[in-house]
Length: 439
Image (cartoon, rainbow, N blue to C red; front, top):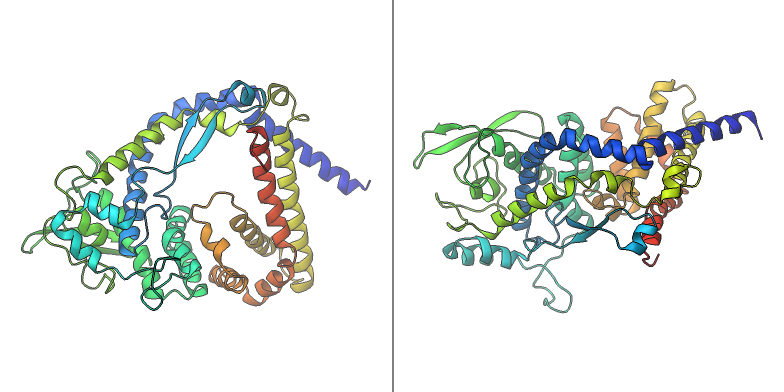
């Protein structure tokens, strides 16, 4: 065994032991549990701020682009938990978390009938263009959303807003995805700005059923008949704009000059489109917040899940530690392969710039290898040429050389699917084995 290989194995084992001690050992789980108490109040305050923004924004995309709410993420992401059975507990299962479909995730027709004032329901439903459904729609009388474009609308903007606090990076991510998928730039910009308007209105204006006491501001009033509120928000370019709105439905769906897209937004009346009594969607939001609060204290056992007592005591016996180590090995193998490609394609790169290209490939591996879908479905739905175009465009906007990126991508695409498949399989197999589910 070469000395370099010996050093690598020793370093990997050291990392595995540190990972085990921090998250999977009894002391590590207890430490995480105590930290949950320390962050409890702050975490709930952040959740009360962020969850309604994602919730109301996702709901708006559903009605504006005619998606059933069962299809919109993260609107439809909801979970409940239970204690394990004795058999499951003996296999190392500390808590069982199951995805459920919430009652508020319904079809567009049901959403309108449950939440919108009766006098507005028919005009809204009549303006919808018919989408195609197999065995139901007539040929020539419907349209079908391209898969990748549909994924872009339903979750890519949400993901990018969540992951990119920098407007420069967010802009690059959204516009590069739109270009690769042939989504008109004006539409991509509008979707981002509508979501940003909904998000910023949560704090910048006190709106009934949406604003937060002691957090949301009383905004300025525009001289208008009837008077409307001027709500500032930050657009895709990082510029602060002001739009006028007066109700929650205005913020989510209302047609606003020099902002809205024709045939997308609705011309709203001065009063709110929602029913006067508490609509189902508000009850759904309150239920979502309650479920989140109820899950927070199971964070520690959820992170250290699928670990038996003997595995918690010894990292050499712990299967989760070995899975994590194999995932790290895949990462190191990818890094070494990209370094070798760059040594041929761009031998004059310094270490700092070379690392940028390595990180770009690791991002590609991560986006394609996520086991959950929230925001990553758009990348899995892309055809290979679209994925290549998006990746080159995105990293080109970050200042990397397009020619070098192209050579790297063409070199890694032969083995990348196998690395992605292995990464996903390692992540899912242990959970299914411990819960006694078919692989």
